[in-house]
Length: 289
Image (cartoon, rainbow, N blue to C red; front, side, top):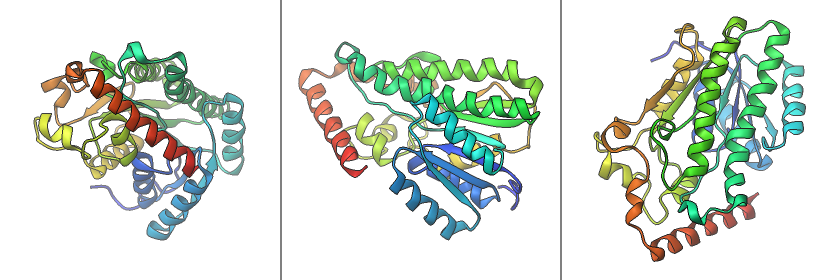
């Protein structure tokens, strides 16, 4: 779909690039000639991913352990990245989410999502964008959003609120920073099965099972489809495209709302089981760090 060398001379940072969607997008950019930088909280995962991507595709993958919730740490690491070579692109992919009745969400639970998705995404975008502006350099930013920014996200309110904030940031900065040659766009994907998100959003179900039953096309999305859309948005193929969020969900949001509204039928037993499953996943993740 894309010419080899499309991203020659480009240097792209992918947050949350060690696993899942971030890793897949990083792999595509690398395959098309970009120098790639990935960041995330787990150093060992990042190191393994960087080595595996370079073995598979060649090129250069730089990695940095970074908790994007820490504004000072973000500015320091972005400074280190630019000191080696300035970035030309940024993909805001790092996120956190879980399903829960909103009356059961504690302030700590809300902050666990909002501090990553809303604050962390702003910190990284600001740190990169201000350096581009100071240097008189343009760039492209793509943020991974959700279709719920358009119609709400019952049972995922912390994420829906935070992603909506990033959607508005995308529109606002596209208008404000366009004069500097900086473009911002968003992708709102439907379900693309990954182990981590499936365990937090569809506990007890097979990856893709929920989407197969509800999606107009009868299937979830694929990594390749996300890779291709992200590559297009990050490329120079249409530099007048800015301030847009593109849904890639097989029309599920149009046909069904694309959110978790059907969980209103769950009772206490179902929610208790889901919470136990999510807490077990979180505990395992902490053990693996």
